View 1 (cartoon, protein in one colour):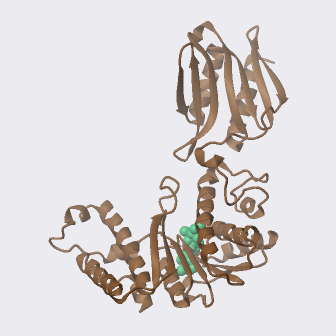
View 2: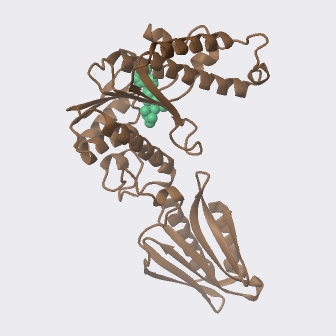
View 3: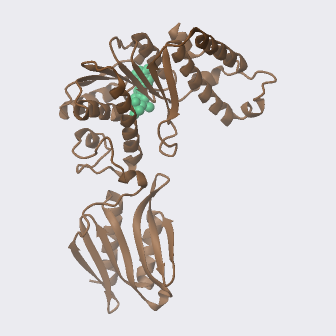
Length: 391
Ligand SMILES: C[S@@+](CC[C@H](N)C(=O)[O-])C[C@H]1O[C@@H](n2cnc3c(N)ncnc32)[C@H](O)[C@@H]1O
């Protein structure tokens, strides 16, 4: 075997392991004179700012230096190092270990059984226990979150984290609700159903509650696909219906959810939930076009210096849209919490409003009305979509 063939086979194995998530680590050893005081290099995968990279630890005589590189940069660096600075390298994957060793100017390739059968945690979050376990979940595989062995794909880590966080939040609220059998939940704008499936699975199979969950979605192809996955998962009381949020009859639902339903579809869902008297309303916010269009510059506004910048006007529109939503919910007898449900680096659409039934005193209601009127006047807002729907 020539030097290049063995080396390129080893590098190919490294590339494949990196791409399919089976890479554990690799190390370069047996330094040549050209390596100077560098004794070895260890390389392991790492997620930095949502990007899968490789972390190189350079072990020098008296210190270690850590640097992170993209996969392409890493391939070139490892190739160069093996041609000039090191005579041996070992690749550890969950499938096999592979060494290359230089003998008489030629690399020799050798295979060994895998000494580590699980891939390492790539970030702090990955090591945590998840509310939704990835193993043996047909729906997670069918939705492209995991491979067939239940391993979360690198590019689905954020989605998986989001699913877990969302189920964790709902879990706490569901446990506080008056027990009702069956628990009726409607997910408005269910999309591909990632969160719908995970919630159903958690409530039915982990909490062992009798639950009926309906996902409402415009797009017929998603509805068909989700119903097929529900059937294959034997999720008998989960179904998806094609239709619009505004037209869906959710009478009797205790929990109404709308996650990232676009623009005023969120308002449709909140209005429906309030009119149905749902015990729990959960919305994760999406785009905020309606109020952005409504906002008109008011001469002499104290925040004019901010609002003349499109970016800040945009952010202000988001805050006003959601702040007003919370206030309309309060007027309708729901205590609200508005918070970031997951770190912004995982998704920019990370604000959630949770409404739970509560009663307000007349003076509190008056204060909310005054605040709404003042906000609308200050920002030149004619109407808020939710306000119209509730009227
Ligand atoms: C951004 S996706 C979010 C999907 C899912 N809730 C999630 O968070 O992963 C929004 C979905 O809501 C659907 N949708 C938007 N407005 C709707 C409406 N008025 N009625 C029904 N579905 C709607 C869209 O077709 C889309 O699939």
